[in-house]
Amino acid sequence: MARPKISTTEPLLPVIIAQGGIRFAPGIKAGRWVFATGHKGTHDYVSGMAPQVLQSGLPHYDKPKHKREAEQIFFNLERVLQAGGAKFRDIVRLDQYYTTHRAVEPYHDVRRAKLGDHIPPSTSVLQKGLLLDRQEIEVQIIAVRPGPGFGIEHVRPKEIEVHPTSGYSPALKAGNYVFVAGRLADSKKFGQSIPPGARLPQGYIWKGVPIKLETEFILRHKIEPALRAAGSSLSNVLKFQVYLRDLEDFAPFNEIWASYFGKQPPATTLIPMPNPGLVMPEARIEINTIALTDGAGSEKEVIDAGVMPAFKGYPQAVRSGDLLFLSGMLAIDGDGLVKPARIDSAQPYFGSSIQEQMKYLLDNAEKVCRKAGTSLSNIVRIQQFHMDLKEFYQAYQVWERHLPAQHLPFSAVEVPFLPHPNCSVMLDLWVYVPC
Image 1 (cartoon, rainbow, N blue to C red):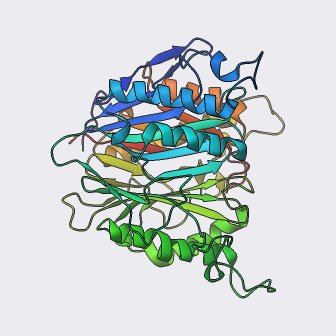
Image 2: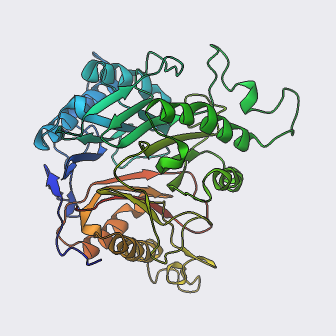
């Protein structure tokens, strides 16, 4: 298919950050969708954390700093939604990163106050670092612009419990799409974290592989029932984001993934997190999901542009309707990190590994987009997972060369490791496909 010459998306409230000339899009309107990515406690998107959030002179004078930070984020999100023709009740998915567990409950207090009974499927994960000094919360949302045939239905079956302090819907339908909250292998029994079926028997150091036990439990007892309640199934999954705390868990997770999805693979991104990284310190994994309803008019199309995936058997991308979901991307070939990104130790200051990685990744992403009938200029969500956020600006410079003068909807997070040696950035990209 021919590549569109210009973007068919619209940046919402775009700004230029003077330091570095960084063009940031707090929101993107794309057809019936509104994406808001990389939201922080800043009042203008260009000046760091808002003074009213930090209250540097009197930081403990009134409400907690994390509550002030959350309030500023939701104020900003509301502005983006209004600019895109949507409201809080039109949000279909929330993703939150925190650098400390202390931020979660104050954030939840604000979220309940702002969203009321309309809290959509949510994922909350601790991460090592965020872009701004003293930033401890970051939020991404997806919303829809209300219209005929594309309404929202919260799915809250009684058998799927959610803790009242979180208050989100386990699943949500928007048109033919189903969004399922991040799920982990937690027990329904109060005071019991991981149930017996998802962990080794007490007193044993083998009799199963912990990550495999948790993964199967999540798929069978968490995600599958939520999909069924929303009129969907595992065979209709379009995209997984999977958070893992242990490098040694990646390969055994992929064995379970292949046994379930080898013939109908969804786009999948495996995202490292710290240990602990989830609400239960002993939990190893959390998975969130996007799927199609059974009998949906849209089809699930696996895209093959000849690009090497991050893991064997993974699709490069999956398209459904007007959305293209790419699997997590790493700058690798059959020998590991691509050769141009390997810095000669005899000439350590010549060249930039991060820029060579980004160039390789964006060139590959463009190939995938073209194969799917779109262009990287229609990007609606950029998630960058860096080993060191000091590399962010060099990575951004490659985006600027690839998409000059375009405001970008980016989030950048520092993670504790990446799954392949010497890789220092992973991309998770979402792209609009004009229909």
